[in-house]
Length: 116
Image 1 (cartoon, rainbow, N blue to C red):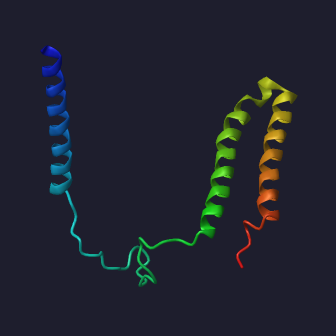
Image 2: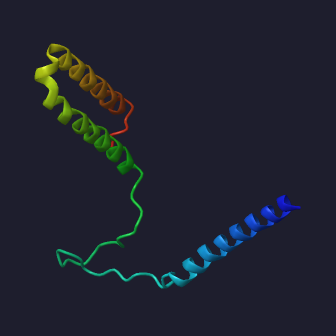
Image 3: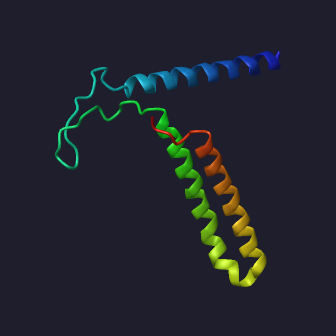
């Protein structure tokens, strides 16, 4: 009998949690009215809304940026230990840069960076 009581108690707690989350979302909801476009920062009138969609071509550029950003994340610690590691660290970094360059060349050859 205690197993059924425990299962019903757990079900009740889960139901209360779901109701609590929905209640909190209802209490914190925003207005359904669209946000009006207004100047920000530079004072120029915006051409399009700030939450507008981007063209799919920008995602390729974003991925390349993130790849080279991660390159910098790996290169900083490398610069700190290069003297202790010796020539093997230089060889490893050039292999890493070669793999990144091969990825960029592949994307370029496949037309991922073509804008027309």
